[in-house]
Image (cartoon, rainbow, N blue to C red; front, side, top):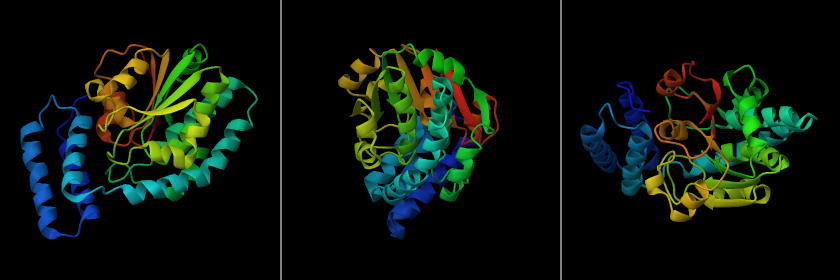
Length: 291
């Protein structure tokens, strides 16, 4: 997925908001924004990938000011754990494995809304409960039955996480994948990038007690750039039967490469560029099977 002209406003606005969050030093704020502007003057072109630009922008900000999302990630984990019992009750009240799988997918997709500083994603934590309840109504692309058919025949599944907080709701789907007989490895980012989940977030929410294994991709890039991942991760990625990939970053990157196995793409359309790519409105749930 390539950038569109309108992406520049989001890339710059997120950078501006992150810089304000990270430091009150006016001189450092201007220095950091100037560095980003110089980078974009060279790299913002029609063939650029939005996940790559977002990654590079965030690396520049962290190098100069620190991590702007640390506190928000901690809050996200806390708030997600508060609504987890509601989502769990919606899943577990179903007796059919296929319907339980469906409900778990929907809750996991809703969790993807926990992202900050996106103009098209006016997210508030207090919305989570209602969003979980209306997840079916917000589903604009529904390929969950096809995803279920792939998942029930998979022996080894790789689950690519996205955001902190969201990873708590991912536990419901990981549990259902295991109930179908799969060995599930959950992968998180190696280091801070946006508000993506790290190993510490997986442990805080209890994912390490649900998944068969939790590991790092070896990368701190948004989405999945294989050339930036560890050999250990790539060996696993190429050996599994099925991949579940969460979030817009994975949508922006996985749609650009040849996939070794089927991938279930689960996300919320939180920006107009991604929404347009999938032919849906912003603020919608997407469950897409990629081959």
